[in-house]
Amino acid sequence: MTGSEHFHRAEQLAEEADQHLAQEQGQAAAAVRAAVAQVHATLAVAAAIAAGSANKGRPELPTPEIGPPLPLPRPPGTGPLPWT
Image (cartoon, rainbow, N blue to C red; front, side):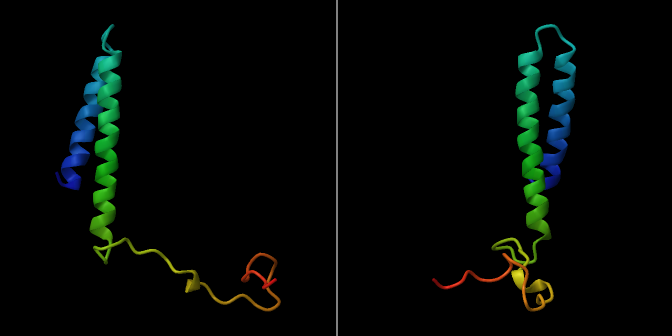
């Protein structure tokens, strides 16, 4: 399934879960449909992240060096650990 298909299936299952909640004994079926809808929604998000990633092998993560260097003396806890 594509991300878009996962998204539409999640919406469909969420609507079905809502309909089952209105029934007297449909709460178990509603819970199952809601859980499966959540899985499809998660897969849709994962597909969107993968589609937006420039490197298909792994998502791009920011490196620690993206900010400007801190002035000296550095605040506590912002530098490498001291050698002991």
